[in-house]
Image (cartoon, rainbow over all chains, first blue to last red; front, side, top):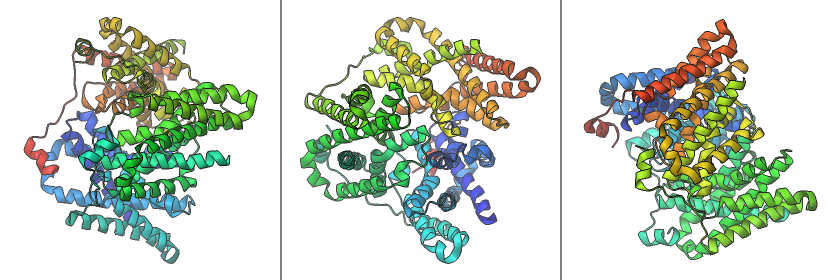
Length: 211
Length: 211
Length: 211
């Protein structure tokens, strides 16, 4: 799957850039920025592998994507002033990353002979969003994916596309449809600033529950 | 162990409700509330399984309790105004959950042929409190279990009850005694608002250590 | 390796003390202080073992270092007023801990037949700094190792010393050189208050990236 491989590289770079930028925003030092970049890019896959028992995780035995992350982080460190002009491109890269990593996780469910949609969604979403969750926890933010924008939802829809089409079109094409659905849903959400509903407790209700 | 199974469902629901409520308090979106609910309910068991090498974790291969959590979270999302009237019932449910999950973890030590009290306590406390720890980390709170109330202590006493009675009464009954001790200690702590001691550093001491 | 064993005990005590002190600073209760102490001392090793698939982790099957941590935490709890006089000694102990645990992790890469420098660095740094990262996340701080001082860098240099000397001097002596390099670099960093560079975004740049 050469095309997905190219996209995987693109997605890794985008995730690494997002981690490095957040690290710089939080004024981490040089090592911290590198680490945040690498964990954002490969953390979701490591979490997935550890939870599923595929140890040592692929990110360690084949550190290609770790090196790509480090190089990306170095780029951000030295050229962040230039990067600012490309904000929208970064968001698009990130959406590509979400799509690829979701397809990646869903594929692992398939290859691991886990037939349930539940596990496929779990693996797809975890691979796609886990790195960002670790990034946010490291810098003391509530994970973005829990708070705003259609993000995990795009992942879930992508996995469902994979799951329900693979019997008809084969796993290969189903993976591409997973990638494309995730990407397109995410891009639409970015373009129209779509958010999931938030159920706001009023002050009195908060006090009643938590004092 | 049909009765423990019923309690396990009750405990899962209580933990899921607590996760969903905390999520709503922190104004997470719909997906975030569902995720926080599920991780609170099954996170302790997943942590335990992953640390002990039982992968994929049971919560994934048998997702019954994940679905129970999602349904509970949906209930909270739509009916939280009604739930406020039942605050004490929720605390009691949560205590039941602590008791069941503690017994669950202790039992795993037993079945895994780990003979040490230390591992039994580790597994009991981790299963009982791990979900709440993940919940608190996700929403940027210092884990409640480290800060206030007799909570993990109830777990520890429950596991000790299991450990020291199982030779005399058999594992089955010892598990029930673990559950009951944990539950009763926790309920007493709630009723009398019992806390563990806190050793407060004064300002000068803090400065000396951390500048 | 009897000397490293002694140092391992010293390092465990130092890490446990640091965890207990941070716990008291954050006004955790008695259980919380014990837990933070133990996770700081053995958390890095547990993380490493779980990620590499050595489950259950050594810290559980051989709980010696857990008990050393608990005893250290009790000492801090009851005698912290006396400890304040020894702040520099604690920093030195902590540096010893960093050195030992780094050597420990690097050795595991060697014994696990992972021949890449990348995995050796990963395991060395994770074992040396993982406990402190968990400690900081538990008490809602951005992990210190990402923010200030030459800390992980000392680890990395130590592992490189191990990696490049072991063919010439044997694994045993290479481990000692790893320990000594890590320790000396860390002590120098403490003495001269050396930090890694921080790349500060100005307000306008922050707004451009994150709104």
